Amino acid sequence: MFSLDHLCVYVLITAYDFDDFIWSTATASYQIEGGWRADGKGLSIWDKFAHTPLRVFNDDNGDIACNSYNKVDEDVAILKQLKVTHYRFSISWPRVLPDGTTKHINEAGLNYYHRLVDALLAANIQPHITLYHWDLPQVLQDIGGWENETIIVKFKDYADLIFSRLGNKVKFWITINEPYNIANVGHGYGAAAPGIFRPGTLPYIVGHNLLKAHAEAWHLYNDTYRAKQKGIISITINSDWSEPRNPNKQEDIDAARRVVQFYIGWFAHPVFNGDYSNMMKTIIQERSLAAGLLKSRLPEFTPEEIKRVQGTYDYFGFNHYTTVLAFPVKYGNLQGAGTIADRTWLDSGSSWLKVSPFGFRRILNFIKAEYGNPPIIITENGMSERGPTDLNDIHRSYYYEKYINQVLKGIKPQLNLESYLLDNVDIRGYTAWSLMDNLEWATGFSERFGLFYVNHSDPKLPRVAKTSVTLYSTIINCNGFPDPALGPHECLNTVPEGT
Ligand code: GBH
Image (cartoon, rainbow, N blue to C red):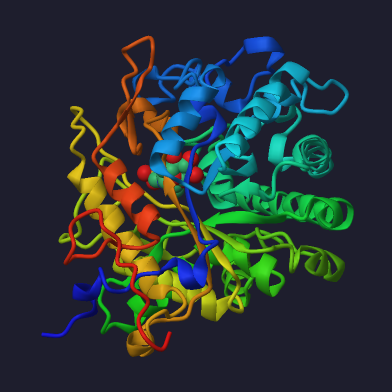
């Protein structure tokens, strides 16, 4: 039977139409840097969380991590081996501003990022910098962290410093990584720093401040730096895709819609469409009043704030890993939905991550339809393993092949013959998570997402390529899949007639 899945290798993007496609890989400061007290760095909420017994699996911590703080050359060497065009990494706020504010700038810490950026540029790799990937200065947490709205101006000041110091060399920015996780995991069920268990109201307050802080940093760049520095800046939003558990049941279809609106929609709706979605506002209001509260748990934006937040994007930064099946539940979470995985979906090393590539294409199409066809940069996608090391990571190659294929099917049509099958989603780039095995937050070093293996019991922490490095670098080199007729590494580079 004719199936588009068999066309995986033919649906490719090629340099003749899309030569600035971003092929990238990503890391985050706390997960790789180490140097937790080096050269005057302040402590972050992750330093504190990971040093609290029983918070992180095996009591692992990021004190040393991959020691990237001392390994600029090695990290850039493996990026060159991958042939990526871009590298996404984050800046540790307390490394640069130990007390969280610009009163004291830690030049030694800032210098690490200068060295990294310079080495990347010398290797012709564009830096894509995340300002905030979860390692808040602990001193700011001590005065309430993201719950305290004074964080907004502090984040803006921090962003200002980074733009002013690094902005002449860096053209790609992300303000905040995954506000959903910060709000829900960090402040709802507490499985990530700062580890606060206060589901219900707190995640919505935190989410509100995150959105405002993002918007202020975006406006600052837009008003003060853009004309001179000519970069692009956005927020990175993560979301699973959600399908009804039983596609014939209206209540499951409704539950799946709620999951999507409460996940991607929580942050994307205010930024792209303006304000929280009506669905979120209505459901949270109803449930809050039913619980005896006087007003909704979801804070309200004033009309001015709605305008201030709406449109604060240059692209849709999107992290995606997996799909879930939704069904209604009466009690518990505000979205009134539970989720499970289909039992036929392959496992990864992470309980929450099942291999379900079809959902990637569907959520990319959802973004196009729901948020006005924005340019999209996929800022994370990847899979983990757990247990004994096997450098022959066929599970990861399988995942990347299937997921990247879904991206290519979603992208601007290239081959006229097939364009009616494709979606014309405006995807500008793809980022593999992660460059190397690193501290996978509360699951420590036990879950490994890396293209490169890092042996944490070897003090030298060497980076060793897994087999998936060959696959990904081939895809990058070919700007799409290799030609199936020619061999595993040869590109299909003939331009079809009439394109
Ligand atoms: C991203 O988050 C992060 O940006 C990145 O730093 C991280 O290493 C990577 O993905 C891989 O996880 O507590 O079992 O209910 C991914 C999205 C959503 C994954 C919340 C963990 C918690 C699941 N995350 N999820 S659970």
